[in-house]
Amino acid sequence: MKYDFDEIIDRQHTNALNTDGFRGYIFHAGPEKKFKFADDEFVRMWVADMEFGVAPEILDAIRARLDKKILGYTLMYDPQYYDIFLNWCKTRYDWTFPREELTYSLGVIPALYQLVEDLVAKDEKVLTMTPAYGFFLHACEYNNVELVRNQLIHDGGHFSIDFDLLEKQASDPKVKVLMLCNPHNPSGRIWTAAELKKIAEIVEKYDLWVISDEIHCDVIRCGNRHTPMGKVMPDYKKLVTCMSASKSFNMAGLLFSHIIIRDEEERRRFIARDKVIGDLNPLSIAAHKAAYEKGGPWLEELKAYLDENFRYLKDFLSEYLPEAVFEIPEATYLAWVDMKSCLPGMSDSEMCSFFANEAGVLLEGGDDLFVGNATGYIRLNLAMPRATIVTGMERIRDAIYKRNAQRK
Image (cartoon, rainbow, N blue to C red; front, top):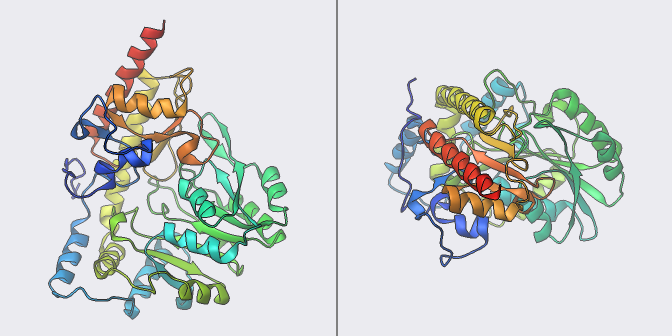
């Protein structure tokens, strides 16, 4: 391989949420919370950024922008940017959209907060599938609107949509928005074109807005293909698509995303109500241009490396923890594992604390972090060198064996 995904990179003293923010995020605690392991001894398999270095082509582009020496107020004025991003979408997803529909945000999360504020009145509701990314709920809580939860059906680690329930929930006249995650976080499903068409039929029947979070669309298993909702619903005006290279190329800290808004009125409102008045990070623009122009080979090697990581995890669980229920996901670098039978009688909050204290592994899971329909599940970030994953999984296995032996 041209790129080194086995490199161990020290992230200490970089103000990283990954290394310094886990107490508040996972355990809702401050620096006073102590563990049996020192902070630098943890295997960090929790937050969804990678332990891989950013592609050198992107770093070179950032350095070249720094050589311009001035980092003043920056908005998107580059007419080539749309063409570069559009070519990526056309090549990867066989999908295009008009230039005027492309708007920008510092991230998908702030865009969700703004879109819910724009589209949902205080007595109205948002619908999503659960388990769900936590900020789907937080965007609703921030705007004082109700989140209606459509529980995904799970069978042997495979997740599917309960379409009868989805239609029943969508028929509520108070439901105004479907917040869709495709590929889905945390299950890793890529919704098929047939599934998306069924969703589209329900959406059109009840005249809902669709906010389609497609931020994981490039990190898919080799041989798979992502279908944008915009391709399935080519003429539906009440559609917003959210994309970014941040997940695909490990640039979440650069805060940049594409918010593709079909409806002209909502597009104007979204831009007018933007809390940062369109300002962007100049390094983010340079980085994203480089990712979409030159990052393809790095991404393909990343996907192949991740595929091997998932195969390792599947084999490890089959051999050492066969009670765990897990299916290799079709997308994302996140493994969604049902651990209920491995740790009988343990609550979600106890599970995260157990793995931190007894295994020295930081991970996320359960209803508290994934909105609902997630009891007994953990989410493991596999976007890291395989040696780190081996260490983490061996620690997890040993801690479970020890705990269950003591209970006998």
